[in-house]
Image 1 (cartoon, rainbow, N blue to C red):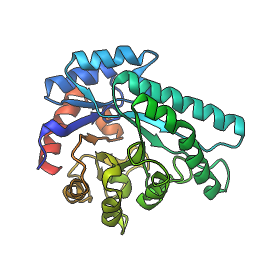
Image 2 (cartoon, rainbow, N blue to C red; image 1 turned 30 degrees about the horizontal axis):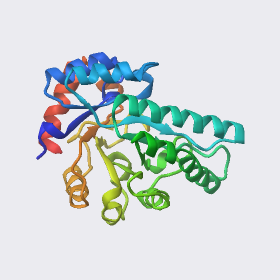
Image 3 (cartoon, one colour; image 1 turned 135 degrees about the horizontal axis):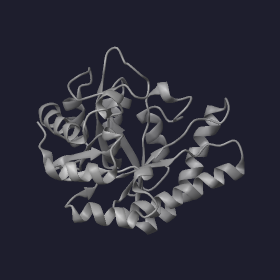
Image 4 (tube, rainbow, N blue to C red; image 1 turned 90 degrees about the vertical axis):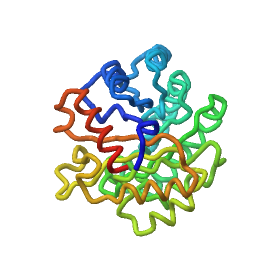
Length: 269
């Protein structure tokens, strides 16, 4: 059973609320960490970081960077430049982790797109190191391979991360994306010191929507507690982010969402 000291509320779990509203609700419900998204941070990440710190919260990560594959060299360069800005934003927020969602192939060459991911990380890793920001490669569920990420297993993510210094490039382990993998526990053990984040939600049966169908912990089939124990055996003891994309949840008041997340976190994580 988890306690609230490790709970991080990923902002997209209350997708229609502002960053200020989420921060205030977290304070009211005893949540100490937050995982903001770039679109909500806005043009002044320094100010957003001060607002979060003044409320007594810490930033577990910034989402998202990545999206490296593109059809032309010019577009790939633009995406690298955007990732360099994302690193600066993470540093301004005073978080040491930028989550990388690595993007789909621009055509049918999925292997070529995976190489673009490696090249994209290589192009930004030095700037990340100088900025004190780690890069977390997040493998997504295979159903997102065509439109969101060509990196769809922990095995692939581990192979990519292994090309870089373990202090700078690691993995974001999100149970929604990796729970089904027959090799998941072996890959978690293999990842070890490269586990930079752990995200939780649940897999509802039947799944109501590919993107917006995540469930609250306890409403689905994922062995969340077993996966948490596995990442802890591998050495991860940091914040645990609750990240749920669900329109029915988003329709609720932000205080109701944070309260429900906190209760389910204690019971099921």
